[in-house]
Length: 390
Image (cartoon, rainbow, N blue to C red; front, top):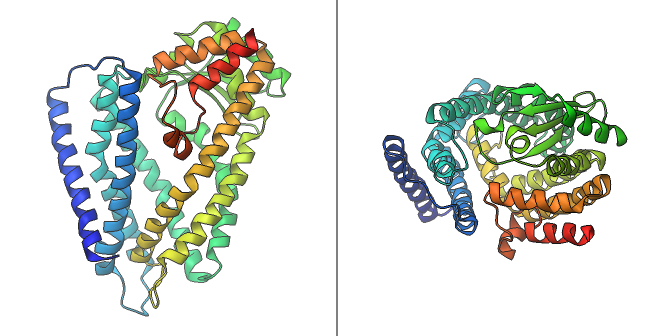
């Protein structure tokens, strides 16, 4: 990468971090006043922050790969010791996470509080941040070391080995994450009473009657409402946020649960594993072609830094097709919920209430939906349900 681009990336990272650090310090001392609940303003701000975050992340990876990396790379033809590589990878991930804290604080929790979308305290946010960083390091460092080992032993075929290894990892994530990781951040309690029986009756009709039905304290982090169905094999869970249970009509909540159940019944997890495997092959093969240097191993910490910069570029290119797939599955889940409940009016009411509670826009700009949105516009979803209820 040309030096002036590296310098530009370094300036962006340092300047952005300094500005956000100053804002974070001021925000922690004297919180900013609340903002009016304006979905359009909130949506524009979130899109701007998302684009800035993508640029900041890519710039950080570029600085690590092309500024710090060459200074740490072994001499041509020399191999890097495993202990040194692991230590450098750990330090790089930890330092990157630390540098991101001010921006994540300002753009995440502080902004959400100003819009009335969260009541989480700074102490609780920092606790969650520390736990998520620890989990990321505990999982990320060994996986990166496994990747480096594959590169060392199979320098030409490692993208295919990594792609194949990704299949059981994606499956395991759908078992481990909801069972062991999610409880680190929230309290999950069995849901009881009449509504639990309604949910279980619905699930039994579609072969998921053995799922555990849980209430989660989403309000610990956010005022936004949601539910989800997760897990594979014997770990199926229907999880409903307390923000949904406490603020929505039971018929509306049941429609939202039916939508989430639709993802399970339609085997969207398995579809996601298949598509994710294809995307991984694209990212790994493209990353290798972009990051390789004659006489330099990709298995060193510096080589891995180049590789992850390239992964980020190709991952961004894969984003629009993945978003289109997600939107198609959301439409299918809406259709399932409509068929399962025969209550399009409740579905439309639920989406209108979600729009208000989550400060969601009726419709994003077309470019944003095409490039990034995992869901169709609320306007189109509500119109479809209202039409079905007539």
